[in-house]
Image (cartoon, rainbow, N blue to C red; front, side, top):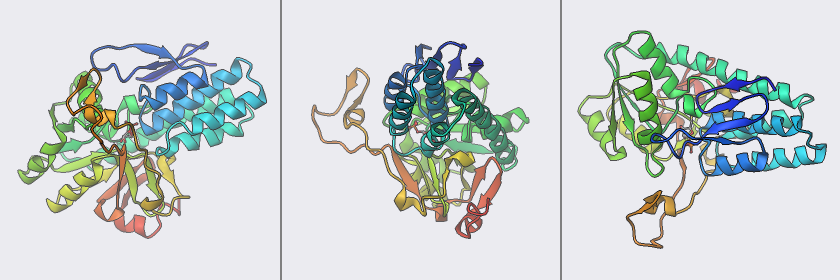
Length: 329
Ligand SMILES: CSC[C@H]1O[C@H](OP(=O)(O)O)[C@H](O)[C@@H]1O
């Protein structure tokens, strides 16, 4: 395989490596994900995460497996197992369905990687045009280079606006329970030198009330045909708060996150994760041992709360989405 590299994924021509996102921001540890079974475990514990990246990483692992001589039966089984690693981000199924029928798995995985890089550029250009000089921006979870093969989705838009010289200030939700915002988005924003402030998820409404935020930009794990979308839990509440305060709200996604087989948000499967992730984090636990906890990893935001969806191929208003714009593309 030709070597390739993104912020959180790299192939040295022999083996596939992932930056273990559970150890950021304090340690940058690269783990091998060449074997599909290893990659599945890395995806399921969010060492590798982010809708676009898990599709790209799964494809690269499967291609490496094929390149190392896997039989057709082994390849097919690994493809199915990778496809089922997490249920919500449709990018994983999109990538595995492309790999399943690939005549040349290595070339297909390289094409999937290159396509994600290109789609990130498209989102960045279309989305940055929405951002005005001087705006306060609010984002949720992590949607940057760590979540894609390119510069990111929502955070890629923010990065491009910054690179264009727009004087923005970013407020990053820490994003309970796994703290992708506090750990990963904060790490990326500091590396990029973008003026930013970390907040707890519960503080977002105050910023919106006090006029500190002029625009909300979030990622997506699956966009239904009518424009409803799933994203990290807490997104729906943010959309309600933004609408209450009259603040524009934009999901940002590559078209590989659009699932036209999903008619609306009710059809999007939502991953339920271990209750222990709510009771504490890593070595710490603050809730009573065994305390029942509910841990949906995503929620669904209805298209009616969307100002416009930023795709790699353009910006679509809620009215356009409800009218079937995604189906026409
Ligand atoms: C580039 S959008 C990434 C999307 O995926 C995240 O979920 P997770 O951290 O569980 O993989 C979150 O929903 C982001 O918006």
